[in-house]
Image 1 (cartoon, rainbow, N blue to C red):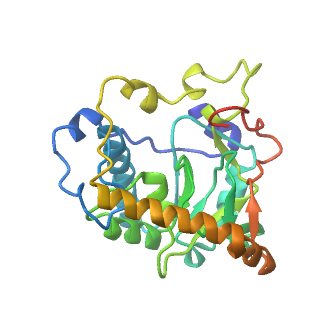
Image 2 (image 1 turned 90 degrees about the vertical axis):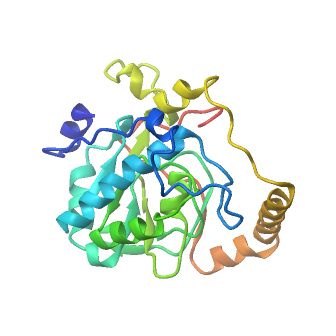
Length: 265
């Protein structure tokens, strides 16, 4: 991560120690609220809880400093333009709560483009995968802290989920990508731990899968998901495009490796 920051022009990064998933497995975090019929998920794994709490500690620091800050996970690859792009956006921190800086090969639906700090941004219209790189304003940190007083939601969904008054955007093109989602063959200078996810591999086969909830909860989620897919197919995607929005995969900065093909890419 230090090398990535250096090549991107980011100086003096502050490293935060991640919360240990073993702590999360022993009911350490009272904010975790499983079995809520109104929550997006019924339960979370200890690793998912630890990931949320790790980021939450950073949100507290951002709120306390009063300065916009970039949150980067340690397996992210950065464009050499990252520092300049981030600095330009940070000068307009009053105009956003969160700007998602990374992307993966996943079709997203974004609102009409806006210009900020000479960068193209698109409003997020639904939760999108990955929380590996994002720019957070102090006001955005305060919102996330307030909303996470009780949670049962995956971190990436949580920070990108639209809410009244919450201004979250996707940077276009993205200036970061997680190593596990990038085509890294032949990139000898990329550490092996960047090309995969330690969190996902360390938990496989050791922790029971979280319960999906009672039948009524699952049926309601399935009905909402089916209705959303049908609405997109029949009219919502067409209306979004007509309004100036976009439906597609967010491109990566030209100096980043392309997306990895196959599962997860």
